[in-house]
Image 1 (cartoon, rainbow, N blue to C red):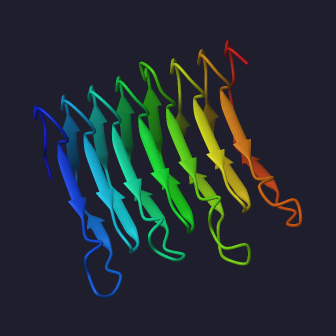
Image 2: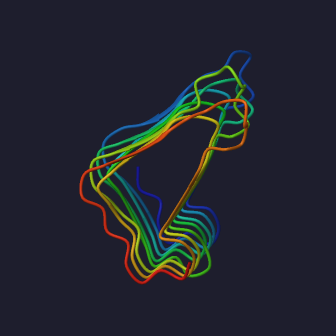
Length: 196
């Protein structure tokens, strides 16, 4: 899918009107650039899966993914995903389920976070882990390079988060003090010159 140089949202996908929760899946390579608002905005009751996203130079967020109207459906990003030079957050996700994200690059957000990820409203007993695999880069963002808020285990890999206005990484899973979850950081990680 390509949606570029539009005055408002590049692509706005909403399937919440289905009688039963249905997934949203984008395969192949997808490009959302130079739009007046979000590059891609998805709202769903079901699982959201997107692949090989390029969402750059948009007037609001690079992409916004929200399936909190579902019960425990999650979000998966596969392939290589790039969110650079957006006015707001490069990548914004709100979900009640597992977040499994691969190879994120989110740099140079003018007012926002490189990646702003939250599934803390998941049921206390539900699966709410957040996992980043591959190589992940968050540099020169106005706020945190990457912000995660969850009830679950956080696992991240090969993070580079340099010269952000806030924290390089802000990983929080203390939403429910009755649940003791861990944070696992794999690979070689670099945090230089961040504001906090």
